[in-house]
Amino acid sequence: MKRPITTVAVVGIAAFSLALTSCGSGGGGGDEASSDTIRVAYQKTTSFTAMDELMKKTKEEYEAAHEGMTVELVPIEAEQDQYFTKLALMNGSAGTAPDVIYEDTFQIRSDAAAGYLQPIDDYLADWDQWEQYDDGAKQAGLGDDGKTYGVSLGTDTRGLYFNKQLFAAAGLPEDWAPESWDDVLEAARTIKESNPDVIPFNIYASQALGEATSMQGFEMLLYGTEDELLDTDTNKWVTGSTGFLDALEFYQTVAKEKLGPDPALALDAGWGTKVSTELLPQGGIAIALDGSWLPSNWIDGENAWPEWEQTMGFAAMPTQDGGGDGFTSMSGGWTLAMGANAKNPQAAFDFIAQALTFENALMYHQEAGQIAVRKDVAASQEYLDYNPSFEFFSSLVPYTHFRPATPDYSQISANIPRATESIFTGQATPQDAQAAYDSALVGIVGEENTQAG
Image 1 (tube, one colour):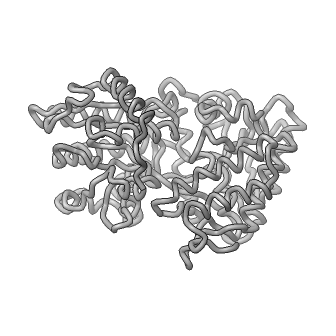
Image 2 (cartoon, one colour):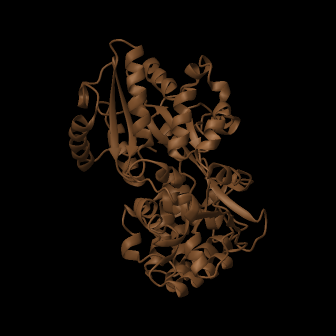
Image 3 (tube, one colour):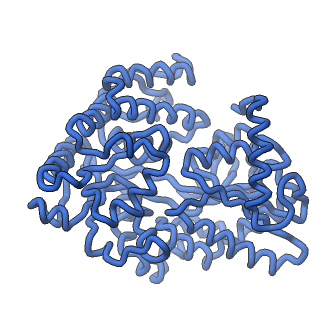
């Protein structure tokens, strides 16, 4: 549901508009965009520059092929939740709203329902590359009305990274393959005893990291139990489940035994970047539960780490007790979507199509560490040879899960980091944190749309 813009928000939008004018790399910032200007908003961080590189390349190609058209790039330099906030501010005014948006798949349904996006089915019908996308990738861009709002840039999985050198020093196997949560915790305890200066295990827990905490952390645990957030048979949200409580108790164990990072560090909004670009390369973390894109940081560029292949091992995240499929993962991904206020929708779609040619998709998949969703890219030997981790993380697809594709998921999900952070900082028990989540959930969806776990 679209929220009303308060006076404070209006001031924020105005201030942010001025910032956009100064950071856009094309012509005509602020409210001056017209039908011959395409404004493109996307995320950029010190550890994520692949989209910035793709957008710069696409801008050059598009402008060369379309005389008189200008592409205004608006890189939003912020971590994930801050990116969503700033993007919402842009979308709050037709004068600052982007024509093309780097859009997380889990935001598509809510943003489409809020009126921030427009469907692109008519353009896709005439696009000869659409047949290259697999059915799962096509589903990722759907809104609640069944219309398509975004074209997938790729997908991802999540698993365990471990430092083979730290493992060897602790007497742990180089081919570590945990079969339960207890195996993960035992390895972390062994590391702590062997090297007290190293963070044994990193699992995201803070509100500052938002969806990274929900998806890379908590949901990687929850979906390894017999419970889920939403019962897909009844289409009702689950309260009071044993799996939810067990996942929170896992966090409590990590916190109480000091198997994870100091909360003062882990609560920082830049913690995810620090983990991937500093602590893992420097041997400061032994085990990290994280996403498939991390090695893309290490292959080249300012965060290059030539020794990563020899140093890092990979393991699938086990289910709670090894039951079910034995392993679990979560998958998501991002899209390029068209803003509802695009003044020249055909031009906006043409830019999206240019960004997603085979050559550009291949480049992005490689540099962003994405699991390919275009059939021709997935079959490309150049893609397969580029990153040795692609094979492992692609092998997790059979065990993966997806977040509930509902407009209210993002609002519900925001309460998960509140629960995990309260436990990680010792402010609440797992039982209290679960009760707070359940209360918030009922307030969002209504008691009639929930069921006891």
